[in-house]
Length: 549
Image 1 (cartoon, helix red, strand yellow):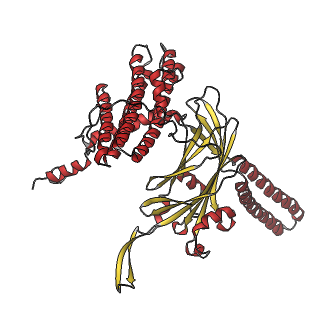
Image 2 (cartoon, rainbow, N blue to C red; image 1 turned 180 degrees about the vertical axis):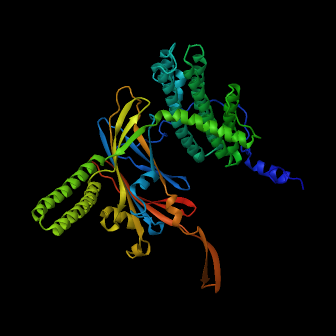
Image 3 (spheres, rainbow, N blue to C red; image 1 turned 120 degrees about the horizontal axis):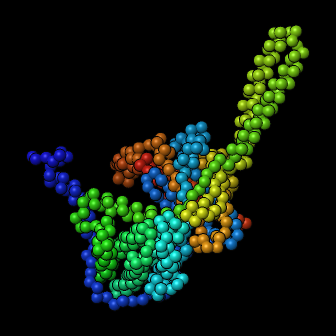
């Protein structure tokens, strides 16, 4: 049998390649649908931004070993304080302890990312303002910023402001478009007739088309405005990113409808046509992100790389930087200096008393050596006591949150973490944890280690002229990969007897563990209930997240 360089038969290799190639889901339809307006359709359908009274936490699985949770901190008209506190109840079989899992490892596994949220704007409102060239629209603001950048040089203040404005526009479109897509799909799922679903799809397509047309008019006009090279490149990158985004929205929506089958396929074909139009547009502009039915694995990888690069370019305009420092370093140094002074004072006192006994050489020598030994141990004991005292009363780390794009300070954060004794936890936390227990003896049957995380956030009000963001979002990613090193195999065979059939059976059972999290997000001057989730994990990683009501 003939073999290829990979050692596989040609037919087998071709089948392997075929598995990695794109699959055709939906064929694009025709454009004979009536245009429709949806002025009020999405006005009440965008995601509700949390307020200071309703701020909460969203939990999700980032990948098999990373638990992700996002916290929203709305800005106020004055400095606003938030308190985050969470208790992670970890099975003892994970072998986490203060002696084996110190604070440095905790913070290494608990990564934090902060960013601004874009202003809330319904998709249809964004489209209508763009089409009408409303001076208050984000597209016209971008056009005005480009006018101020005429004749400027790369790296100038005006050039950087124009690039930033284009990236913010892309973020606005991405946020409002995604929320509109979700809302539209929900309405389509609830539609009573295929005609109603088709009308909803057409309305959504019309808004996306108006936004893309308005932006592409700006890109075309920029060619005659004598703009710096970096602005022209940024405008094209944003154009390509928006095209990929609109294509992805239309594609995923069309696949969703196509899977419903029957009369829904016409609406799916209409949305697929939108996706094809975007791909053809990018090809006409020589953008290197156009797919193909028979795309090779390398081309698919290139498209995904390009998509990710463009998304990072546009979304990074919202990223914030946190400058982390040791919050109690100087306090500990002062306490250590006091410990050294106390121990030295003791040694000097003993030495002065011992000078009276110089005629007793042996005793004099013993007192000096003993005083040095006691001084050394006294210093070490005081350092341990002072360090423990400071750890209980001062935060581990302090942050300064800065918006480097706009050279703006947003607030400060203090943070603490460590292990806690189950018996000394607040009663409300214990009640939330034991809510699903049938008997107190379960504490002995399922012993747990408690890992605690606390964060205090103070946000400054938004300054005049800053991006009118409604809130700051913090995204945590908790890496539990090292926690699973001591877990059992994910599957095992168990045997049991059936009393009714009178037989003995064997079956493969999954071995899972429950990681419970009790948490709350409290606003200054208010109270917040303790909430709880259950994270089900196995040796292979995170399986699911169960809310506990």
